[in-house]
Length: 447
Image (cartoon, rainbow, N blue to C red; front, side, top):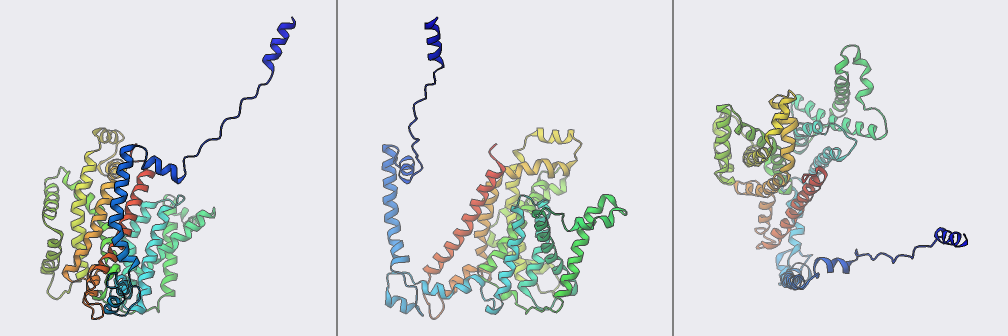
């Protein structure tokens, strides 16, 4: 009895577990280098070879661009007198304003800055989680923001109708941010406070009526406040620099996807005329270089308009680039559509969906999500290809960089401007690439 009680007591006695050793962190710099570069004999040899090669390649460039560079001078001859072996960044710094704005007047460049700032404000709500109807915001931005931006950039006398459209564009942006602020404060949207006025007349459309009425009220207020505002005319002929490059590439990138979707769906259509018209447009545009399309738009497009009508070269170039980008985007979209299985179409038909609801709500979202890398690659290529407009006389950033070399004070300065705009293009293209990767992770395209 005593032995049983003693053994049972031993079983019930608490025996503490020995303390575990502290976990070793492998997040330090040394551990990271060991894991990624020196985790084996061959990997170590390869890493050392690459580091040596990079050192041999980057050392002369860093000496030229940073160590021996001249940052302050009034002419290229002064740069050569200070250090002939270094880069002459003084010329790029002096021409930097022209590289960004072209020949746009200095005292009016605030309009360019304001226009791009409003564009960023238009895109910002698309990244907020609590904002609904993001597709509506994006579509309204495609149609309304160019009107507002053109009113700011161009200026001059405009018709009353165009002034009202510009006020409507700015009013929509203002109403958008009013609604965003109210939503994050936990309150109703601006239009929802006006819904009771329309419930008795149209209960089903009271929400839409309230939103339109709130928009209309803000339009009236803005049109009254800015009725005496007169902007000085800045001709399109003196637009240039990075400002012009962003206008052409931005408008083309926005329009390339809708044009590509329409052409891709047209090519897959069962209607003979639509199918072969889409095929002809795609194959004809893709079979010639982009510079050929630009020259044809500048020389042949005026033939289809009356002689009394003077066309805008910038508008002609934008139409040509949009068509060229849309043709290439059509094949990208068609590749995504072919990746959708037949079961998706049958499932949509079983739900009673027609052709357009099936495409808009079932097929295209899946196809475009799978084609994000290819779409962004096309956008990056298009952004770089817009520099070809310098050949037909538009003073984009590439042509402005070339003009530095013919300035009497900086004659012969070729390399430094090209390196500077290469860095600018790298920043934009890398940002687009990183955003596409974040978008892929958020949409989980690999599932």
